[in-house]
Structures are given as C-alpha cells and as structure tokens.
Length: 150
Image (cartoon, rainbow, N blue to C red; front, side):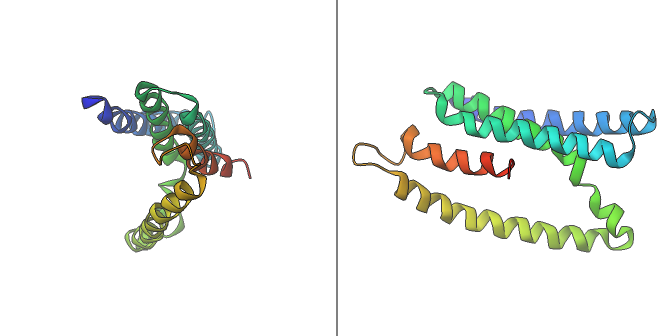
C-alpha cells in the first residue's frame, strides 16, 4: 500500500477547501441562505461518506478500501462546511470555549469507539475468520454508515 495510505487524508484536505469555497460562493451570490447552504453541504457530505463506509467490506482489495476511505473522508470534510462553523454562530464571544467542549466530546466518542470496535470485531469473528477478514470488519463499517439514515 505504501504511500496510498495518505490518499484519504489528502482527499480530506482537498474537500475541506472545496467545501469552504462552495459554501462561500452559495452564500455570497445569494444562491442559498446560510442555513440552507450548511444543511446542503452537511447532508451531502454525511450521506456520501456513510455510503462509502458501508461499501468498504464489499471490496476485496486494499485499493478498493483506500478508494472507499478516500471518498468517506473527503465527503466528511465537505460536510464540515455545514457544521464546523456553528460555534461562531452560537456564541461568537465564546467560540473557542464552545469549540473546546465540543472537541472534548468528540474525543471521548473516539476513545469509546476504539474499544467498541474491538468488541465488535471479536463478536463478529467466526470460527473460520480472523480479525482482519472482511467478514469481521463488515459490521464495523456498516454500523456508522447506517446510523446516518436513522
């Protein structure tokens, strides 16, 4: 795989900039309101990312997994144009504090997620499969992808 492991993060960098430019264009040209622009980018970003996450186990090659990961992280970054700026709207004077609190909550979710992933892999492992098999990982990628549709 080599340097292809960096592609999802490169894609994230590119799409986060695209999201900012698109949001700015839609708002300054009065194509959409600020609220509708944020909802649009957030929705597109999260739906495409969730579909890409659910597609990861379908691919049997590392290239397919990198492709799906790249699409997922790219569109998650696009979705940031919809929600990451809310701290400035909610509390402009205290945006730094609000951002710190929300990032703490996100970090705690990430810590719990690592442990939960291990438990899911153990539970999904069959007699004939290892923890690195596509069958074991299918449930791990399907659950977060499916959550977007609830």
